[in-house]
Image (cartoon, rainbow, N blue to C red; front, side, top):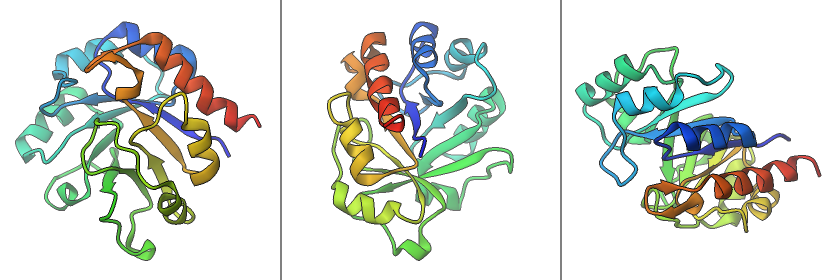
Length: 198
């Protein structure tokens, strides 16, 4: 199984290139109030050169329809990632994939879970590790993108235990909140991808 790797909270070409050079499959741009927040213009400048094979993910949290429209029209992401409840009222075009965020402790029965989703702790971008045993059970029949508390030191073990469709990292590849480190990005991706080769 090849695990999708997403690097989230990117803001500039240097770190986007570091992620792409190391083999990232998806890059996330945060369009909500956060130390990692970027404008549509910043996200475009950082990603306009990338291959169409790389997923460009707009990461939001309870956006209004107008806030989403600005991002959708201006950035044209491949994916919208936001809390599951937000999709009840947002108008999302059919050509944009939906990655609802399911937070630990709020997962429904597996039969009612979305086909593809991000699974993380109560607060995004805080390095909160979820219970991997619970995650592994949920991941058996769905495409789970595991997030929260993952870093180069534990992502390989997380993949072995949970067997998720993908993994997502943000704070663990930073030197300070919001400031990414190309070396940490490369190390995380290498650790994740090496599991795929075992």
